[in-house]
Amino acid sequence: MSEKTEEGRMGPGGQRWPRRRVFRWALGLVPVVAAGGWASFKWLGQRERSVEEGGEGPEDGWEVEGGRVLKGGPTGKTQSKEEWAALLTRQAATYCFLGYASASPKLNLALKAVPSHAPARLMYACWYMHKGNWELARSLLSDASVRDTLETRFLLELAERRTRAPDWIQAFFETWKALGRPDFSKSTLLPEPLEWNHVMLETYTRSPEDEAWRLPMAVLNPAFAEHERQWVLEQVRACSSVPLLMALHEHLSALEEQDPPRPFLLPAVQERLGQLVGPSPKTLQLALVFFLAGSPPTVPFTRRDLEALEKIVALREWKQPSSESFYREMRERVDVLYAPGHHAWALATFAQGVSLGSSLLQRARSSKAHLTEDEQRWMGRLLWEVGARLREQPSRLELETGLRLQMFGSELTQHSPSRSDCIALWGKLGQWEETVKQAAFYRWPLAPLHEESCEPRARDELAWMRSFAG
Image (cartoon, rainbow, N blue to C red):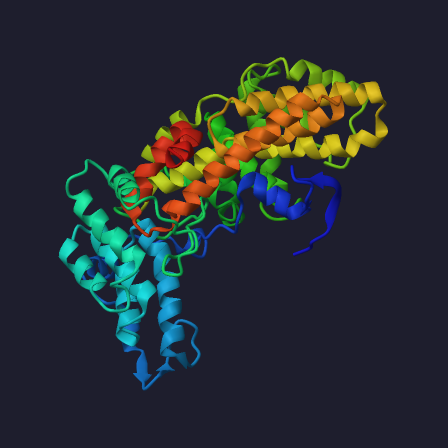
């Protein structure tokens, strides 16, 4: 990946950010895991049901002798038992986060190879807690490899409180506070968190009775469109959900210009949005879709562009409907999948359209050298107004993007108090994020805990983050 930087792209502390890092930062993007694409979708058949009921899966045929795996193994290569157990545990983590039954046989194999492998033992205890088997969870945590760790103490306390608390979230907060808000940010036993846009397309809780989930899943995995071009185009042209089209627009915009399926699908999405919103968009988000369309981010703004942007920023709302409302709609449509809340949250996050703010900022930076001082101040005021609309939204990505726009806008207007206000709020946001990391909320492999958190985060993610800081 190229580490070339763009001139003038700075963080609030003056550090320079690589171009791709900034774009990924704006979207929170990582490669979407699609389990081989749409073609590898499979129904919850007999094999999955046998695993759910305690079967160990086909991996039991692997041969182990002494300290080496002689046949098979996750990589197909000979490796030590410790390497094998560690790899199986990392693979099981995704399934644990999503509540998928394949976690159990992988962790079982990891502990057969290395009974003292602490991360596998801790994760297996989380799996049994998720299943409500508290005794097995306690048994796993009684082993000398994990017995005296702070993570085990936390899980044992959580198990006690969960049986009395109304939900996982309350039990988690009560446990963390009761133990003195311990810092798990550097834990070597907890897995890395599941990325917010990690898509698990091959796992179903039941056979779908309708196809309401197919377009949302195509939005999360645009690679499907390469195999089903005609179907996707027909669905886009018939779609009446503006936020769903915005989510697809956001995901396609994150791709390189020639990456499939962007060249053939993005124009169709923009055309359908134009048909739905008409010549006078009601939200700033939609107005920016058409204002920025067709112009590379390096093209400077002209005076005519600034006049057009002046009219756009008069719109008082960033988007409609709210993230919470759209989340609930998508939660119902993807209910056939494991972790439907997780997938609905990813769709709601894409629908926020924060890349529009990042693109606007990039063009503004490209324009600075081509404008007079008066025009620069004018542009700075317009960026401030766009940022203000984003700052009204209760999500982390929207707030971050709004602050970036306002910080550059205040730099152009040379108004120090407003810039200081932005930097102060940026600092607070960083403190909230650090507190969430301290609790390692997103690293505990407890599927029901994360599913419960999706709706309150969709309602007000910033309030959710502040709750960790008290």
